[in-house]
Every structure is written in C-alpha cells, then in structure tokens.
Image 1 (tube, rainbow, N blue to C red):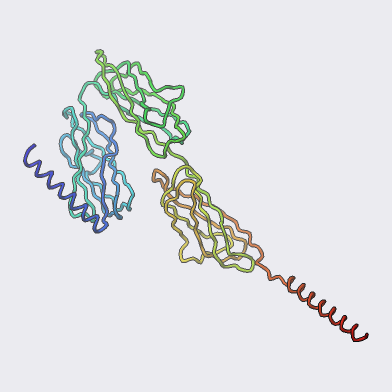
Image 2 (image 1 turned 90 degrees about the vertical axis):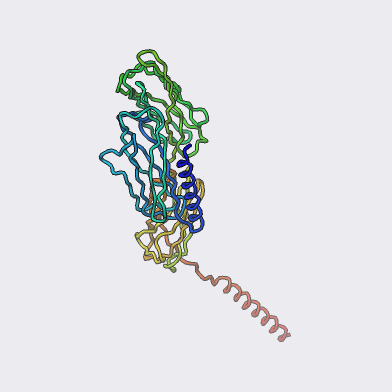
Length: 392
C-alpha cells in the first residue's frame, strides 16, 4: 500500500473519532450513509444503474443534509439529475432515501469498482466521504432481475412473487434454472416449488417467472433478503452460475381502535375530563402515535392542546389520552389517531365516539327519614308507658 494511502486512511480515521466525540458530548445529529441497493445488478458497461442511498440519523434532528456523487471514472451522473442532493431536515432516529441514476462508461473493465460520495450537514464541521463497490461485468452473457412485483405478505399468509429476468448480454442464454433459497427464512413455496426453468432468453429479452410464497406464522414484520440462484448456458454451451438477491416484505395492516375509558361528564356536570383508550390490536407495532381531539358535535375542547403524544405502541398494548371538555348535549367525539407503521409509512384513523350523558349522583334522604321515624316511634312508646304507670 502506498504511503499516501496510509496517511489518508489515518486522517479519515481521526476525523471519524473526532466527530464521534463531538456528537457524544453535544448530542449532535449523526448521519449513517449506506447503499440500500442498485438496479440492475450487476451493472453493465454502457448502461445505467438506479442507485439508492439510505441516510439514517442516529443523533438529534439533522438539518441541511447534503450529499454529492463524485464523478470519477467509470461513473457519471445522468443528464436529468444533479450530482448534489439536499435534504432540509431528517428528524432523530428517522431515515431518508435518495435515488441516483448513474451512467457506466462503455469501456469500463470487469470487476468491483468503487463509487464515491461526499456528505455533510449543518452541524458537521467537515465533509465525509463514503465509498461503495459496484459489480461491473463485461462478459458477453449476463442475466439480472429487470422487473419485480410482490405484494406484502402477512405472517401465515400467501403472496405471489413475479420476477422478470433480462438477458443484458450480447448473446442468448438457454436452460436457465432459477432457484429460490428459502433456507434460514420463514417462507416456503406452495405447489409451485422453488425451482423454475426458462428454456431460452434472447439477447435483450425478458422472461417472467412466478412463485407462490407462504409465510410462517412466526415471521417478523420486516423485509427478508432471499437468494435467487441462477444456472444457465450461453449459445455455445458454456455454463454460468450467479446469485441474485430478492426482497420479500412481511407486513400486517395496523389494527388500532379507540374507546371512551372514563368521563366526569353528566347532565349536572357539563365540564370535565374525558379519557380515551387507544388499543393496538394488530400483530405489528406502531410508532410515534399521537391522538388529536378535533371539533365535533356537542362539545368544545378546553385543554391547553388538542393533541396528546403517546409515542410507540407495541402489539396487544394500549395507552390513554386525556382531554378537558365542556358539553352542551350528548357529545360525539371526533378522535383522530396518527402514527407510523413498521415501514415508516404515515397512517391515520378517525373515530366517532358517542357519549350518553346520564343524571348526576343524587342525595338520598331515605335513611334519614327511616331513622327519624324510629326515634319518634320510640318516644311515643316511652310516653305511653309512662302515662299508664301514672294512671295506676
């Protein structure tokens, strides 16, 4: 290794240590940059790839995050895109995704070639560099995933996985076997099996295969990466093997419900507290849940705010939200629950919750009257006996 390369690595290492110390001491935002995926894979000389960058904020709120693709051979940014992308805000523990369309030089050699990015943000005093190795293949034959279609699968549910395999090479291929490796995953195939055969794919053509997938009931709510093993021959009879990666997302629709847990309100007391219970009945957790009591029939919110933040809500768990209101008639509360699902998609559910106002607690005089009657009867009996004694 050259001396300059060693010095450069030492400098970068010192910068990372310094930034980590600053972030730890001052609770600053910390950007974690990585390549999520690129398509098609492997990359082809003379073609382009769609490259997806993941930015995860591991610290406090991040502002003015900037990332720039360094145009180094054999890579260049497509004409419809600028090298620098700016994200104005990434909240703490949140993620952002950036898509680059990158051209591959037609004379690029075979092998793994690093693509470089520089990034910074408003609280970072230096510019960091990130590199990722792209697989470039210049062989005459190359088969890759060109189209991909799958619906979310629930634990215990079924779905169809449809893949379009394209021949990006310069000659045709034949006798292609595509086998899903479902070992170490919670998936199995139904009658369709894990191996599919395509007799031939002409140069530049795409052929479609389909699998029917079933998920075990123990599958977690997350995307699973599944290997797709390919074996095929070119027109000359030479055998090729390759492994591609397919993502199978396990998800479940959030099942959130709300009920009125308790209330101070009645016909005699038209101002008081109402408590709502928010229940996560689903099998997936929800995040950053908030409850909003909006305007509705027969009530007015007098709490300082109409929003109550609940935070994360695990499966089969609940939280309560309290509001102060005044009523004029039997109210129908207009309650909205906002949250993020397991894949960070924004969700909201609105509930109409009626409350029948009852009569307030009444003071009872029955016991007092009975007691007084007993005393009167006792006194009367005493006077009657005394009067009889006097007569004798």
